[in-house]
Image (cartoon, rainbow, N blue to C red; front, side, top):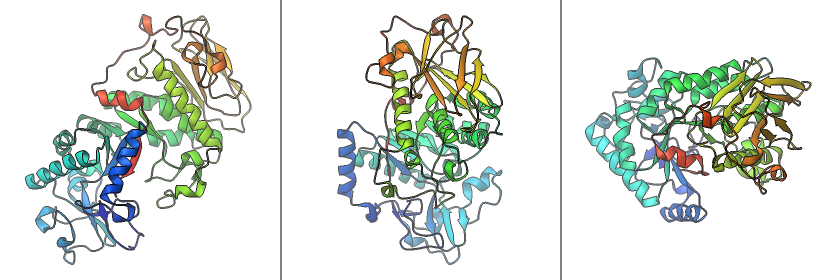
Length: 453
């Protein structure tokens, strides 16, 4: 969407979140034909086009009575907006939904999404947008600032998968939005994820609790979430966490669990910007190099997840993860056929041994740590336990040899599958079906993001 032109007190609207005209693209990023060409090029490469959209507001640099509404399209009358107020209390949902975000220098003027004409206009707009540009999915900005019952008809009109941004640390509050949108970013998990790995004094019990609280409060548990470790609204983790093993562990958590893993651009390059706008660095400064530590690490993680998805003895996409074992410093997450083992001890710690009491694998199964340089192996004990050694705080991701193939990570240790090697067949794993087929589909695919800005 076309945004505010020129500089404001907070800089230019290069990010696309200060719209003024819903009927026009941002000419700074190209033309209508350019966007259609991008969509075609992505689809030819087997990629998806996901657009980031806003329905909550338009942006202005003045407030009433100086604010003139004819600068906006298609909503250009004062009656198209809620009576003007700034949000004063984020615990008051009426305030959150009907007052404006921002300050007198830059205000996000709140649209009246209770009005039937505006709702109809939006539903038609999104249907045409998706059709015109062959869009595969939507990121919904500022979801909690729009009444919940707006979303079902809007998304029915869109007809594509959608993930909503609900910036809040409460599991019950955030989880309630999974009843009206396909999935949400798991912000409550993110808050605990960063706290757990902030330093070696962090408490990994927060993550263990997060798994349970997400299952209790989200429609399909974490299967109806997007799992992330960085984004454009929060300081990058390396701006305050300086141990690369802790950074790797944070990223690994998002790939080993139930949520759709999302990597924020620049994480693969080790970007370390602080709060907005420092966390929105230009990517071309990297020269798009792939010969960097985090890029190689994430590539291996992604390959490991693909191996788990491809394992015909497993239902990785729809089987909920379980905390196999946890302490204040260690956690093991079991999601057959993957076992993710993490510590917040850091890279300055000595080698630490730990026994995982309930791995979810049968006795005698050989597991391979696909993140280790030597493809270290462990054997499951007679009681289902797994003894691991943390080496300088490095994260570990284990797969059975039957899940490996000759072209993937640790391919030389692959062996032909002779049936299921987990306890899944005898009921040690609870089954849970995902009601939205889109979630399972997106789990198996890479997403391409394009901000409609």
